[in-house]
Image (cartoon, rainbow, N blue to C red; front, side, top):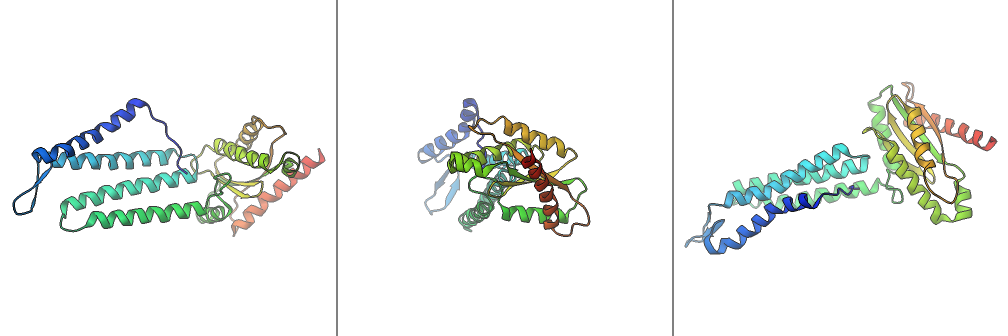
Length: 277
């Protein structure tokens, strides 16, 4: 989901200034009508600071939409990118709806627009949750299949599919308990996120102790080495590493299953070598 973005106290105080000004204007309005006032006929009339008040409120939506766009571009994985995109769209829609409400004041645009925006955000987040593995917070198998299908529609010669399997994972569960096994899977998932530095990289938990990475680039061996390096730096009361098999996309592959089977075959060969050692 959304990655926590830490800000300095000075930035927080600066961000609060427009809000403080807005509250002060609201509190002063009953005294002098600087925002709006009601005449004897019951009609609303704008005050001298009404447009400033509207601008202050729209400013938060504008900055929020911009920040969400920036963070989505910097996102390390699909879930974060999608979450920031949803947040940015919501902010932009709210700003547009508010502006339209100021123009067409006799039509209840804001109420309807707000309700629809919240509904769209809710549906989008629900769809995203369905595609996320609850333990590792990676994409799940369902989302992986969708992504591979989309990738094969826009084929590229530099696309690789990596299949990873945790070495001796059953032994870890049997000797150290399933709680330690779950912690190991979470730690490996974080290592995969740190290793995959490209925006097009896609990580998913295929099931159990198996993971899948979609990689688009020219240094797949370097990616494998980064993964091993990060995992070997973990601190656990047992040895922890993964076996990796990968396959480059070929035009003769008609289905994503063909691609996966080839990568899985190399993984199987790696596991056989490990057992031999």
